[in-house]
Image (cartoon, rainbow, N blue to C red; front, top):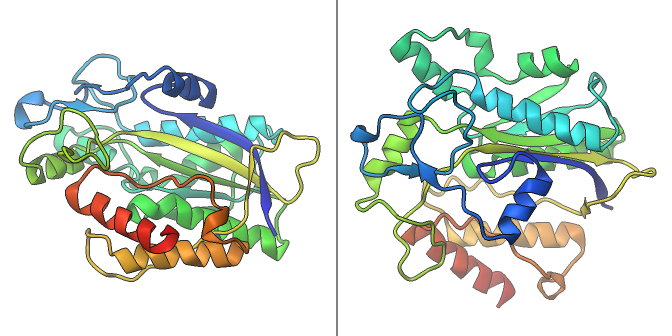
Length: 287
């Protein structure tokens, strides 16, 4: 069993919708740019993959992650022909940091920000009438967990459509943590390169609409399965066997063999440990 993807939406440092992002990727454009929202003097690194929507450099505003999410969800919903009324459509969001940047601004600068705005639900309800919203915060796998629940909801027959989204804006605390742990700021993100130096953070949002049937809508692809493995191996370090187990689980549920797979898209953080573990897991599964 598989579920069609009938709507897409996204925004990133290289484009404000899927078409712009695709054209930028094909053109070899990079969204890496000097810091705009943080004080450059505090950090070794000076570049991020930021969405350039601030009024002026160094002047940050709360609610940017929510803005990104609403934009991506709106794009996907319109693309799928759902319009602006999502009162009957579950919206499942994966996020690493939610609106923690807004909390930083509230704490440090006294920015206008209420506790209920930390979560995305109220904004989705106000904008789209969405009543069934769920947030997953499993670090970099958060949106895949959301996708797994969407798969189960469609399989249960309880809904006709589900929106799966992911959104994050960069926080100063997370950027500072990354900056502190990387001895030398990477000039470029080079996953799986022998000269890789570490990761570079970015921000953005993406959303897809899954449906039980495509109707007359364009089908971008189909979700056949999702594999998950929460093995609690380490706070941050990945585990080869855990990664391989999740991949095999997805293959089994989809009824495919490793040799059937044409494309593998990896996490690829550019850090020495993560890249090595991912390569070992790929070799274990795919040979």
